[in-house]
Image 1 (cartoon, rainbow, N blue to C red):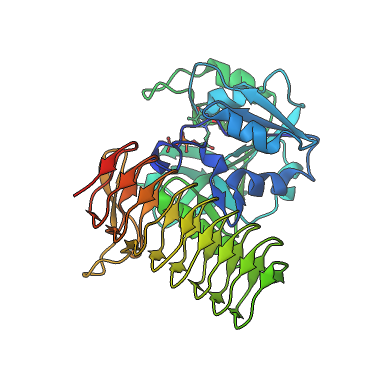
Image 2: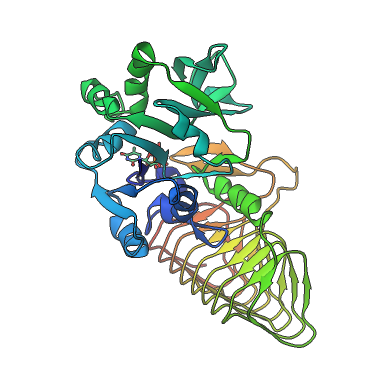
Length: 398
Ligand code: TTP
């Protein structure tokens, strides 16, 4: 038994977080999405084939020493079906296929009982997904693509068990309107010819497609951590709730850490810093004097040295915040924060701060309005109020 994990997509909706890394390498709860997935399958399978393309070197570099992981590069044609087809000449007779961008709780043992199976998840908004209809024995009898009137509230959750027959069916599918070879077209044929079990996921599941999905999945995974403090804790530090502080991290005096939170090796907090629940400080970050970070992911080497507030935000690697850099994360009218996703204005969640790429520098007293995105390699000059998205490589000044 092998596994194929689809990691070749561009992750357009997650820009600027995917400007310098593929979506599966976005860190959630302290490690890449892909690592969470690999931990779910590594004991069940002999080989794990990662289908890579966009920014593939980041994936290869991180997983190259994993004894079961092998890398296969997707060719010219895009699409999930094409990604699966990449493994045709390598994979075992029976195999799991998993999207490389989902965070899920269920174990995958049950999938191994069936020749053909697909994970299905009950959701409130099935019209935005591939809807799956089951018969009385939970066999899949129909798949509808983003239907206006969904026939069920179960959706395709991006985990499959197939055998090699799927390759023949994929090869017979046409290239779709969005110029992709899609796995669902092959599955539509498969359910006509074979019994395909729908396995209902009863645990947490999140298809991480948009920035606020990253923060939501981060909350879920942090809610499961246990306290493990190996770093150096100076005098008068208050730690509440479940907190992981890795060896090599330092919490300086008079700081307050409210878990769940993860502070990775080389991170420095304080003196007098305030880390609030659902925060992850990645390796070599610095949150200094009178800075507060809440429900945010701060990627490695980023510095927030003094008098700043970062809430419900994702900040890329190697950023440096000038004194008194502030993120707003809530509208006066309490309505969902709007975010630009692939050119459309989309409602997100009630609390969302800034989504920032890598290598951004802010001057003193810079403020960000809720839901703005700042591309990589930007300089934001002193006293700027950023109330719209900033493209990468921009110098904004007053
Ligand atoms: P999507 O989330 O549909 O595509 P994407 O990752 O490119 O994201 P976006 O829509 O924001 O651009 O892809 C589902 C899964 O399939 C995901 O894990 C990426 C993977 N995939 C490939 O491996 N190859 C591909 O050509 C495509 C389109 C997706």
